[in-house]
Length: 332
Image (cartoon, rainbow, N blue to C red):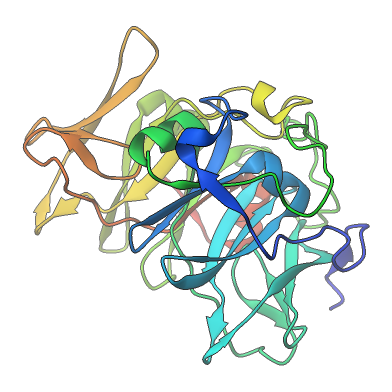
């Protein structure tokens, strides 16, 4: 408890969305193609959670594809996590505690009032101290990218039961690469500035971690790495703006979208490459068959069309947060 800090608001001062309302993707008229949304798909149920809403609420308690989940966004460390919220047969409802751990969101469950790290999914204090939340893959993408892949998906509605300035960014300029994180008291590994954007990933058992610096991934489009005996490939495409840059969420600089996958199909290692088109779009293909792949790890054209790569849980975040939670992390 001594390392937790008050972020200012009291418990539930930032209200979670507990009864989310959704509408069909085709009916959304207030999101631009590059407006960032959190993409979650479970058992064929594809949903998008706009950051313009999450930036004001930070937590959504939802059920996707029959699985109770929490979708959490922490603006201070610019990270999204999605967890199953059923433990021992009991479905938990999460709220925003008002506390920070390494300048990241601390959740609490209303059933036991246990405090949880949004970043790691681990309990920090309380009755469920021996439990751990199960992560669900998610990706921050531009709305246009998500809608093209999921035309029949559902989008979180602005009808939240609260009055907020949806579309406005209450943290303009917070993601400046030379800025300092709010209420962060730890040491920052000097390989990068605190607010450098990275893509963090762990191996399957969580024993090893690595960070892909976003600028380098953006330049390459595709980067491969290894964590122990597991091979990884990271993709980047343009088309999703930063929610924290401009006074409006939609007005931010294009930081793109990322995904991290296993580059193996039916035991066969695959090689991927990225190429830029004249219109600014990026195409990811595999060398072996020439099939085209999207940011969700699915082949959309070619011999392997319909094939999906196994996805690693990854997190888009700032360097200070990643290295605080993974002090032994390698840099890919």
